[in-house]
Image (tube, rainbow, N blue to C red):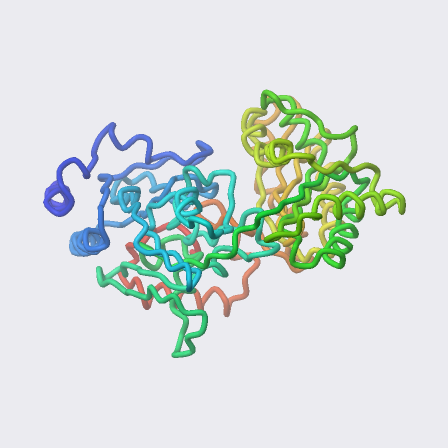
Length: 464
């Protein structure tokens, strides 16, 4: 395999092929859950170099693992322990190729961070928004069909993408960078690669949708007695504000307590409450948006639909409210290891799921702590579980198959999905086989065989 390293260095330059200890940061995932090994790390600087790297790996029979910002939570960008894989890191491919304001599109290379894409929109809005946007790269966002906090209004990564450029497992380049909203000329191939976690090819660039930049925002924090009350308030918000409703985030008080405990400067917005809702409205020029939200919440408070509410009086205060939501994952990481679930359900089924799952888990694991939060506006819940004492978590983590069976069986029973926005990766590769039909699994496997007959693209990830 040293011959392959020499070939790769000839293709991308000596300094862009890493071996030995220099690879260490790329061989572990963000959570520290998955650690792997690689033959080498390659950092191509162009689509042509990616294609050449893929061809060289295919000729050598070397597996290929694409990696973006390495912020994934399911091990999808971490190689296995064999050390046979070539890890292809796309961070050098960080150019904005085109901005077309009249067409409301932007074309970016896969290694651009999400924050860089947002900044490049220059007077327009690219609405995909994640807590990891400063590190996460757009190629990885598309490969996992990322969601984020504004799916309610704008859709997830799939809905925000008009065209792709992809290096196929053969090393061929498919240029589908079309900025068209209507193109009914056969199969819409871009959808094969969005959400495929690099198992069908490597996304090297994308043409993305832009939107008018909101000029006015109104951000509110609402105290609620239950998830059912949150769902009721969400419906009322939609009825009242329609497309002005940008985000609606459900936060349990346990999750908020973690943030208050571990993140300096965090302040509780209102008194203690079992549940909280973070609401954001935005528009291009409705100067009365904040007062409209204040008046509406006052009415809902008077009607008993919520127990308390506050609207941020300034942009700085709004950022503080959003920080409470965005810092939950980091705060929970500091609290200790937990069993995490990224699930989605029909919005109407969220309350009954939370009730049933809570009861079943409490019976099986007395004293369990549940951190539940997420994008209630699109049915995506982050449902994370741990024991109060760190020393008890070793035994609890060993029970993950039992925990997953309780949670995932209930999700499936209510018509949900065991992966809402983080993909399958290594974490759910086998688990998904329990919940997909034989027909659906075989269709996916047939696509994999057709596009990647050698099975070299990100092996051990996605559908098994």
